[in-house]
Length: 357
Image (cartoon, rainbow, N blue to C red):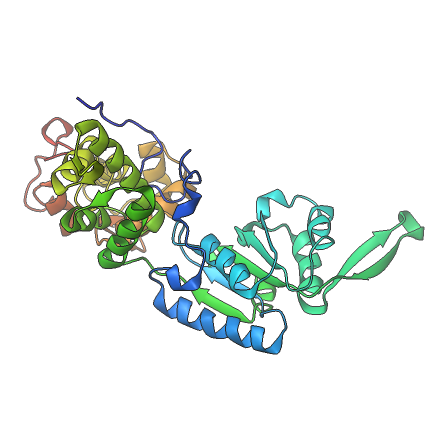
């Protein structure tokens, strides 16, 4: 008997990196032709890369917008690979002082692709330095102190900055305006995720039946990172259950159904905390409306986690809606939880509601 998975972070959270998310780096595509999904972004990027190569100059700066786990970092790596350029990567929180940014930019070579993740978290002083680097390919450096201090501009090689964010609204207009290319990622369809799962399964040396890959895809919250994470866990279940075909681990729909049940992931890809949010609104606030801060306190999460991670998928799935007065649960949520709508039944005591009806 396989023990039930118990992880407070939640296996379907694309904003959290698990210990084995980066272990199977071979799952990341290396070339644009192997990158599945995001067709518009991929096709546009192909044109921009080929044009830059034909002119033998760095590609224009690239700004990638989208929820976590959709492939922004992977696409930045592919861009460098396709351009035949060096690739340097950092995140905005790691750039604490201007000298941290200067230290990276002073080591780049001509055409380097420089990737900054979470670019919305850049500090103002670093952002100011980045403006000059992006436009003039120079660094402003202060020499001396006090009245004797002077600014010296140091030239640096031309490079391509790739900035990625999950919160485009928090990026300043002056910074956004300096990106020549802006692309927005969207959630993947179940069919696209199923294709990604099949590709990853081949790399991992396992086979996945088509109905099994579609079932995993439907529970992956439209996110390749989550799809690959679920695939690895289903591989574990299949191996322990002894599911083999000609000596190769084979993942069947039955294995996936049992595995998802033990991981507490339901048919919409909701995990325990998702259901607790819905139930809290129903049980404690009559289905809503309820303010985000009050709701976050009621489920023991920060408001940032609620708004950045949980809410987007629940809204996209049509389970909650934002109103001027607060969050409200939809009829679809009642139906998914197997509950009567609050207007039809007032008997919604916690002792009578099951998370898994």
